[in-house]
Length: 331
Image (cartoon, rainbow, N blue to C red; front, top):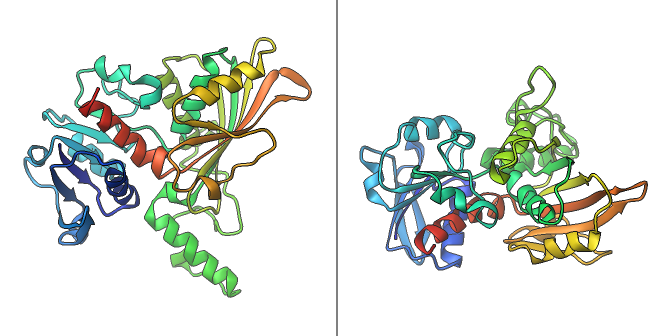
């Protein structure tokens, strides 16, 4: 397959290249695109160097499948009204809630691709992906009437500049020096040695855009528009790895062993044995979503709690997109 990567020099773009090579994706030709400031940069793939280009006219003729990893404004300008024949797997939020564009986690709703005429496939938010995988496993046993989730999201979820800012903040705090303005530009507060309970903008009700995305994307992927999801999204001073504390409320007590069996047998999920922990440090570089601390609420056995952790740059972004491409090439 001829493969194109738009946003090849970013964190997710580079991770996409690495995973394509690791998984032996059948790349016959490779076209790399980025902004003008990266034009001419050379990136190695499978022992060969490829020059980064800017996106020009008829860009969609240069590959059969494109991975698009650019910000929302660029993705909108490039893909709005797209009518080309190439598949475009887009990682921005622009098309996720478009009713004509499938929003896909292959283990959960691959059928959405066949039900759509769109050549654009939207890749979900990096927090949504592990959440809906676990929730789909739970729903195979019993549908919760309410889900409460607190998402603890790493700095890399905000991109390369965010990682660089976290590193800079650590240097200044370690040296006990005053933080300069250029170390406080990405996040609304200092992130190092801190937590920020805001990701995205707040609406009039006090809900952040990230919290709204988690709810609405999950409903679309699971095909359940009435699913009650109550989210709080928090940025944490971790480089890579998102974690989620999830509580599922049911009409009546459910069989927790059946829930555990469903999670353990779900493709792409690893159920961690009772008594063992999983943290962002252990999941970095891993493909799977890890589930730990599965338990009844001690005060109400209609409630089951669990802890999820996943590498947001892999399964949360690049790997999910590559799994979509793999199914397109070999349904």
